[in-house]
Length: 190
Image (cartoon, rainbow, N blue to C red; front, side):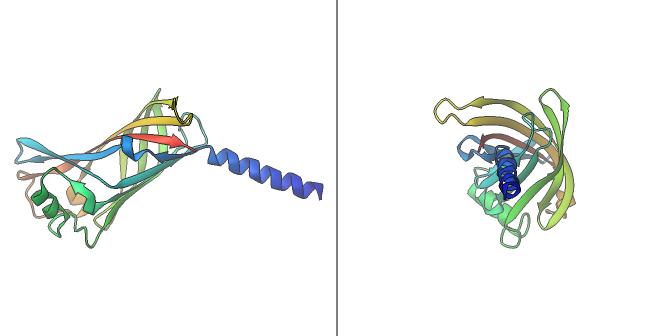
């Protein structure tokens, strides 16, 4: 009987240790955005109003982190209602048919003091491709009011819209093929 209690206690302790490595997105202090060239002379910027993410890590430096993100395509915003509706249409993202984009990391590799390469599967417009993103850990701090640990990250990367079947008939001179991804995020531990 004593062995059973020791076994149960060890499972609870292991579970608590793993739970301590779960981080949830602080949506009030996070943004997920993108930029794409227009007519080769300017960039149009946009983002997603509705997205969520989580990180799981057993290491304090996030070197073994697993990142998962979901964004609602219908929440796309470029500060222009007409353009936003067009981007949600079948001409571009087809929000009715493909309502979300998802990202799930396969590896998070520390390349410098607070810099990482995160490789993972991005599913967008019904197509999944492996992409690599650059991540900077801005730091961690105990929140002065909640006393919970907070971590801040800056994320950047480049994908090609044609790799995901988005507006493949539009010439690159009119709408760039490369989409720059940028995100500033805060996560809360616990």
